[in-house]
Image (cartoon, rainbow, N blue to C red; front, side):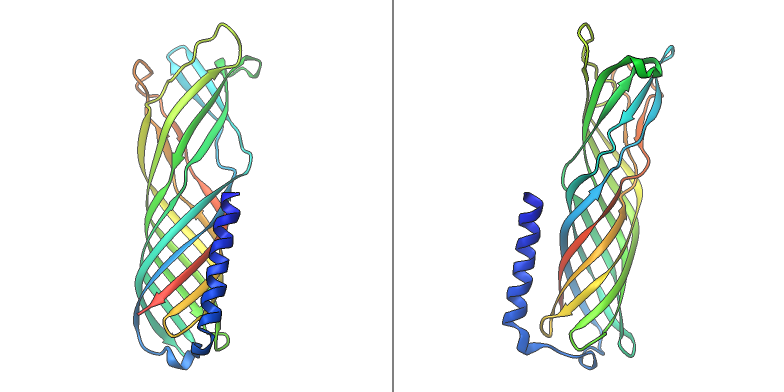
Length: 251
């Protein structure tokens, strides 16, 4: 419901601004100089992230963590600031710095004691939030006087936070356990690819819609008090596929 409301609000805003400024549309021939720009985007993304892994919790105890891989929906947002220039004829390029973030996502799964599927005695859960700061480039071609397809990519550093790993017993006689620290931060390599269309609204304002693939990088939980010092729970990649709606202001 939250995702639908946010997407509807952006679409209504784009339609309103476009209608109000339709008389100000410009062609590619008026964009031949270089400009600073600022862009903001947001939209729903989907992920089935989660990885099964076997971890030595104690020297004589090895547990398997079986991840719930159901598809989940969350919101990803981004701000992008940089410089735009005419590359050749009707082709334009943008280069700058982007900052992106997700809302809270909940991971869950089951724990097999001694890696035995018949010893499915615990369910686990934890929360995570992902951010990254990337160098981003984008190129678009002015296809008509108002519409332009684009391609973009970015790479940089992700700053991923995990919280509240907790294991709940599924059978009587078992105690809750918390083998990892309550909060862990992890720096990771992150990158994105995107493609879509943008529309000129007026001399300074563009609206767009497109697909974006993101790898937000790795997250990790460090061992908790009393756990094996070498113990670590890691998810190597957090992939999302989604829709981005954005507005760009060109100075």
